[in-house]
Amino acid sequence: MMKPLIPPDRNEWTVSCACEPGVSHVAAGQPCQDAAGVRIVPWGMKKRTPYTVILAVADGAGSAERSREGSQLAVNTAIDSIESELRPQRGKRPRRRGTRNLKKFLKMAFDGAAKAIAEKASEDGADVRQYATTLLIAVAVGDVVAAGQTGDGAIVAGIGGQEYRTLIVPQRGQYRNETTFITEPGSAPQIMAQSKTAVDRIALFTDGLEGLVIVQADGSPHAPFFDGLFRWIETQNGDRASIEDGLTRLLNAPKTRNKTHDDLSIAVACRAAQGM
Image 1: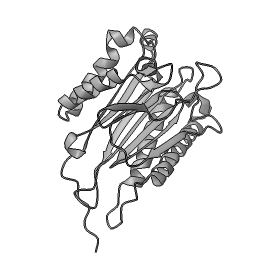
Image 2 (image 1 turned 60 degrees about the vertical axis):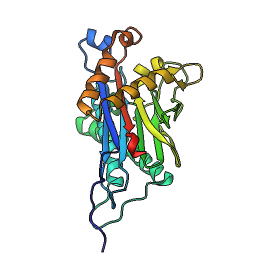
Image 3 (image 1 turned 135 degrees about the horizontal axis):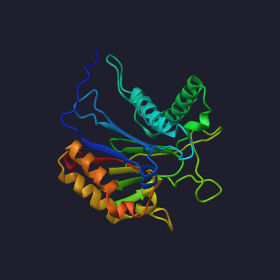
Image 4 (image 1 turned 90 degrees about the horizontal axis):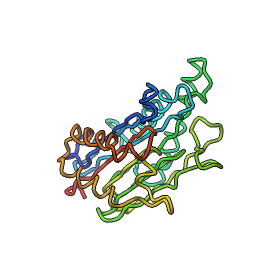
């Protein structure tokens, strides 16, 4: 007889996210077209079973009339899809969380998001291109991290609290300001997964922040920014509301606003030291 599903002793991760409209959108009276979401899947077969953390951000195309709906639908559908695969059901064994399965679940999430947008467009009698959006997803559990990305923006991982690296090189079109959207026919996400890692910090963000925190010459993270951000998060003792307020202040800070007029979104996850 299988043991009942019970939550672990404590929350292994702190997660939060925030989105803010760009200066140009505020001036035009337009809403933010970015979306972000985070979720922790806490159930396991034993108290030692680690939590799974899921993060996603999306950047709706500024020229697409319904891109705000597209980005939010993409984020919600992707997170729901991955959770449905990872959260064990009573009486059933949990799905394996190895690199092969996580890559498969990420591909399913991108396909599901694109399908959901296509169905929404059909219901509304609209062109699917009106919902154009990028999509970035990261999943971490135990010593495994996986990420997927269609379009620009970036996914950064902190390893052992000492090193930061960009997990996937942002996708770009033929021209500098051209990007790829999940609503485009034939678009395919870049997906990676790695095991036996010591990833304890993750940040996803759309291209509004990309130019400020990614070294443009080689695509590497600007380590001082991320180190300062996560050190501050650690001082909040898991207070998600406080962290969300802090992220919102960061996105609205004059130092940020003076360097970009684009919408801004960020999703973060920080593993507790005792959970390592």
